[in-house]
Length: 219
Ligand code: DX5
Ligand code: ZN
Image (tube, rainbow, N blue to C red; front, side, top):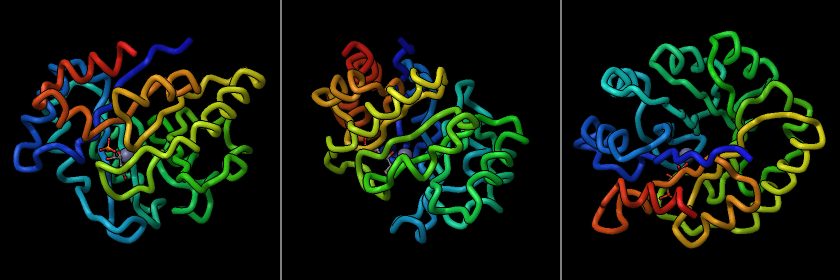
């Protein structure tokens, strides 16, 4: 059984205080920081890029779990690696050659993540699983925090968990979007071992980050 890790999404943080917010997450027991990079093209929202990530990473000792919701993504992989990303997660629809992009991330000695939108099937990545370190299952359509959890994606989590044990693989299964204190147990039981959460961690219990992270972990 893989250890349950929490990767808070800074999309729900106070963007005018990002450095302090990241410190709060680190002190609050976050296992890594989920950085949602959006380009206004792959998703209808625009957030931060390599310069901001580089500045934030300087004062943070935990891993940056960088979720690239950008396309085309291949030509930007190196920039996010240089900026300090530890896990680089891409969407298969954002590259014209998934194998090439996976190998590029590996060549930079970073962990490879691949993200499946709610409607994207596992078939799209099945032939690459042995090279992937983390699969990010979207439980919302990407672009915004605070959306409603889509429970139907848990079938994909269960299926991936089954494939992983049948093929004796060890990739992490991360789930992202609408995770809260009620549905996180379902996600964990289905097989997710890394929970991304923005709204629940930053907004619940008067923004008591430490309490909210512990509540998610204790499920
Ligand atoms: C959505 C992002 C998610 C989202 C999670 O595109 O990928 O990481 O910010 O935020 P909540 O937990 O608020 O749904
Ligand atoms: Zn994300």
